[in-house]
Image (tube, rainbow, N blue to C red; front, side):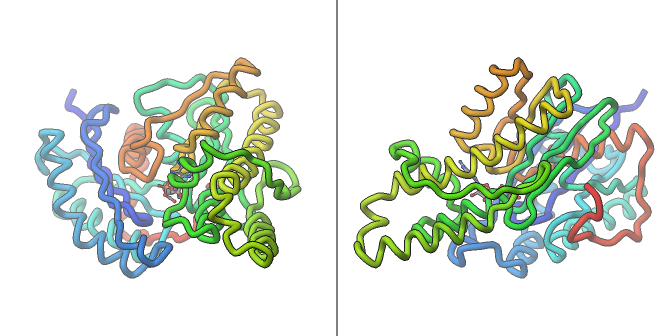
Amino acid sequence: MSKIIILAIESSCDDTSVAVIIDGEIKSNLISSQWIHAQYGGVVPEAASRQHVETIVSLSDQALKEAAISLQHLSAIAITRGPGLMGSLLVGISFAKSLSLCLNIPLIEVNHLHAHVLSLFIDQKPTLPLVCLTVSGGHTQLLLVSEKFKIELLGQTLDDAAGEAIDKTGKLLGLGYPAGPEMDKLAKSGVPKYKFPIAKVNDFNFSFSGLKTSVLYFLRDQLDSNKEFINENLPDLCASIQDNIVKSLLNKLESAAIAHNAISIGIAGGVSANSQLRKEISQLCTKYNWNCYIPKMSYCTDNAAMIAIAGYHKYLNAEFSDDHFLPLARYPII
Ligand code: KG4
Ligand code: ZN
């Protein structure tokens, strides 16, 4: 039987990524991150689209080369349909549609949030049911994966994403963008001695916008009496904010996993790089005897390998798309 070879493309935000998957095995996964946004303190959508245009063709070439595949070997093209920035998605989708038309091979649209969850199934076979916490700059979701990859949304943030909360409070502290890695590093030498409220939200949902406001008012009051307050207490401030976010994520993860009789816990998205979160999730899994799945970093942040594995499963089920679909900034359901 001939091999199933899929070229997968991800361009939903500020990373261009292309991967090749052969019979379910990732052969290449290249990621080009856009550093241009750091100077603006956040992603500038128009700049992101332009960078995708500049990068997408050469990155696809490299990904094919690394996998030792040429265009005529491809069985299908998998592409992120959303959620994400409209302009960025449009670049990837237009490119994928052109390739599929020129090569006369099927096109497979992928939900980016499904793909984050399926990243747990690259190189590993988690036992189900599994509860996945997807935490990034744009998403914070709790998802249940039951038999046969049925994915159900259990809860999500009602306002800011966890990574967004880190980036926004990091900005108040004068950290660069994105603030996550620096906050993580500084927090290691700090003590979480400042207590900020954890939002009380129903069910398995989250809320982080109140944290940003309480940090803002707290800093304003402290700076009134001591202009050097942030400089003198930066590690403790980072440790306190990080601890608040990690605790609120873990509280909900723990209750969702108990309520749904989970056997396994997974974590995905850029915030899953956080050392405190990784450590405390492992401890939680040990406490309840849950299997713990934390993908390697290149599969945690936005990447095309996760689009490839999602595309591969859709290919096996012959779930192909016509070439008329448009990007979706938001998916109505996950
Ligand atoms: O998944 P990702 O690369 O991009 C999307 O947002 O989709 O996630 C980026 C987010 C940013 O908010 C960044 O501050 C956060 O992940 N992040 C971290 C760490 N590394 C990245 N947050 C906490 N600790 C880290 N070590
Ligand atoms: Zn993402």
